[in-house]
Length: 445
Image 1 (spheres, rainbow, N blue to C red):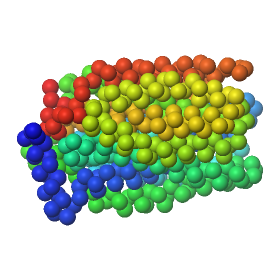
Image 2: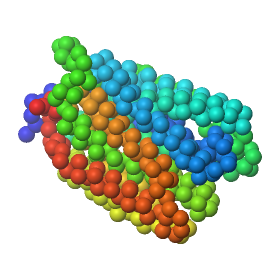
Image 3: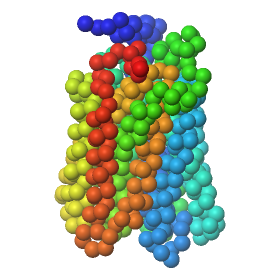
């Protein structure tokens, strides 16, 4: 039998729809498109960091040092993320989710377009990587509030028994952004080397202005969530969400930090293995980019499918299955790359990232968001995930340093990825199962 909280949540959604606002569907669509825009910008940086930036923003005297430095600029955004999460979490929990979503979209678009305008190392010397780092920090601040804001928006608009399904659209959007970013880079990567390094690499960054305009148009009419408006009306929003979070929810934040280490799998797959395959094993750039595209096309279907399962059996078993599956599959995948076995690279890449990783990736918005009440939900998700994602951001840098010589040089990288995936599974196992908990009872102490 449905609880009172479930009936009130459903009636609020129905009242919004009767007023001509299809709130749950519109929130899911806005989150999907906005996340696709945000992560198009974010992922084109990762692709460029693996294939282009070591050659144009750093000295060519030491290629391995240039690769490590380039990966470090990819990871530096994750340093800004926890600070951005505190600020944007405060704004979102105090003044509303929509304000955060509009701000993050515009900031990401501006910083990405700015990267496309930067001079190279040959043109500006040491100033070139300094400007690159500053622009990357702005991207990190934007990303800190994007997913937590979008997840809070969709979770609080979602029907009671479909919260995992609706929140999964945020992560489907990130996969769409990665697909779009990779598709843009495939023709660009086929340019002659001189053209690619002089002007071709700038094209994906300039195109961000167009995708940001689309995302802004979709999000501008998105309504604020009913539960936030209800709290604001009753003056029950937290005066200092961060202080409330530290006082009452520190175990949940700590749990999310460790569970969010599953993001290491994503950055190893999309950034490190791309660089390793192209620069060390000398597999064709377009071939590896195609693997990324196909894996993420599969993920577009796998993420909502796993989310529907989580609405039936719970968040924890689906997340844990995905994390442990990644811990196993990373070994044969990198092994196939080391042997340049293209058939197995495609099969294992799609299975690892497209299917198995999607189980954890599609479920965490509901798993994490349901740990908190409305007063601190955005802050809790933003701070917990962004600290955990910081290791994910530096995983390519760590892996480049761990990479050894010879045919088994990749083994330490696989071991590192497996360890982080197991830690994520253990952290999720300690959480409460919340898939049957009404919205008004989530996060109750």
